[in-house]
Length: 281
Length: 281
Image 1 (cartoon, chains in turn yellow, red):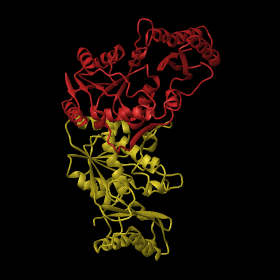
Image 2: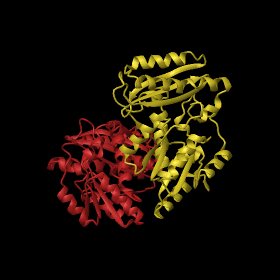
Image 3: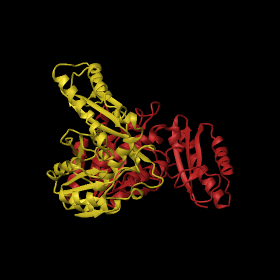
Image 4: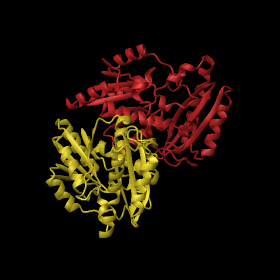
């Protein structure tokens, strides 16, 4: 397995792979890998002959009061996990090599990014879009895999690929969960034992509304109240948002009539967790 | 010479050329070609083995009160000129095929685009950056040529290539002028005989300040007044802007101490013309 540390070297290698006719798969990550990431790598592995994973905690997608410095990092462990997952190249750049001090070009998605995490985290998706475009230009993948856990991010990346004509196929990787249902996330590391139990309220509330919809409930107000009630019983939990939106446009809906994304962000103590489900009436 | 009408077909062809190991040169244009465009094609021709030119009057870079509909078009003539210039592929898409009705991803340059034409034409460089990124992803060029006449655009594209890591070499094509000095532009077609003479005031004023700098004048206030005085004598001319800026950062300067770009936009009757020169003290 190769480890590449600079954007220049990554691009040189990517152009070489391209000329040699390889099918390149790509999984961008912020490292501190868990089984969710590994499942994306396995998905990509089956679609390519050279698999590139990037490990880059992207400063541009963190707000000034967010957890950039605290974000967990363990490169030695990540390296071993990548090797075991069949990664051929790990791209692991320094932040200073990715952004010039006078960097001034940014990519904005102006519709899908308005609500959900976009409303709670101003500038977040600008940072995500910009770094993903940069990584696409450095790695030149044929196929890239993004996780469904970051539902809004996934749809925004798909939109960017469409609107900027990147020749990259985006594959959706299903959310991977712990045995008790908690969606895997690098941020789960922040949770102590009691918070870890409390964090189950996210998936529990998603399961509850999925059942309610299956039983015929269509009113978002009713579904949302049920979720809020369940989460309200957990003292350490504070709802950032619970939203029901059209699965394609991310526009809020009042009734679950078509494919509907229910997405949520909840703070468990100081740790902000997200989860989501697609409701199909 | 091939003519390609859809983004899908252009990208399919580009990926085929890439796999075959071709060196692709690219000249994006809005058509109604003149010798300025042709000089860019000759420059590109010497740097590649497959030359692609695009002809696309990009709606996203025109403001609501600008000349999108009036912009001159003559595809049959452009086609013949491309063929004569050694173009291998003309990419000539319909606007509706380039922008989805719900397009929502845009590229913004946030520093170099603040002054000059960026101040006079809000949204213009967002449209330019977005379409150039799209064209780069559709054509996948190794080298692309942009004219120095659009000085701010050229520097913004260079910045975008740097900040988004496009693997494209940008080559600067010198401004081509009519025998009497008028910078070639598709918009020169709008000028009647009298306006055509009046339009010479742009280059004349650039020559004047170039001389003044050569003779030791460094004060931008003095240089700018000399330009404004000369243009003021032309009744049909109205100055949109005359700016002296650092050639790299496009930040306004008060003294011509380093490489300084003097850039101007002047309306001759209803027609807005631009020109520029680099002053080297």
